[in-house]
Image 1 (cartoon, helix red, strand yellow):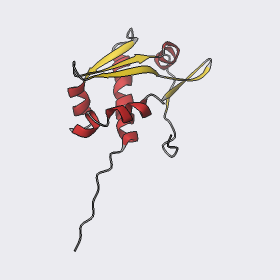
Image 2 (image 1 turned 135 degrees about the vertical axis):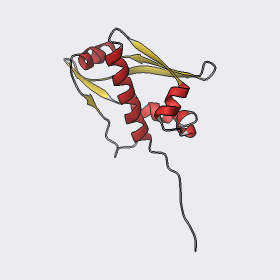
Image 3 (image 1 turned 90 degrees about the vertical axis):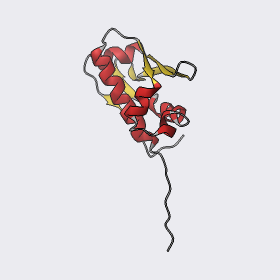
Length: 118
């Protein structure tokens, strides 16, 4: 009897969790134009999946920064840039100001198509 298994992280699910976390952060801090998250909080958010909170975080962020918000100028990315600061154990996110305002005004987040791989 052979037991076949593999651990394939679902980057899209983790990106969705992160975007929901960002939405909650924005609702609690409406004046924020950027956010800094402790990587320990991201580890907890990802349900203690250490690989996703460390090695795979850049891949997850590449998906998360594809999430859009409808604006007057068309759909725009919510995250304008991000960086992972390993020295300070933090994730730094800068928001697109136009998309951020639309989100605060009640526009919904538009998820990227999970069937298209870039």
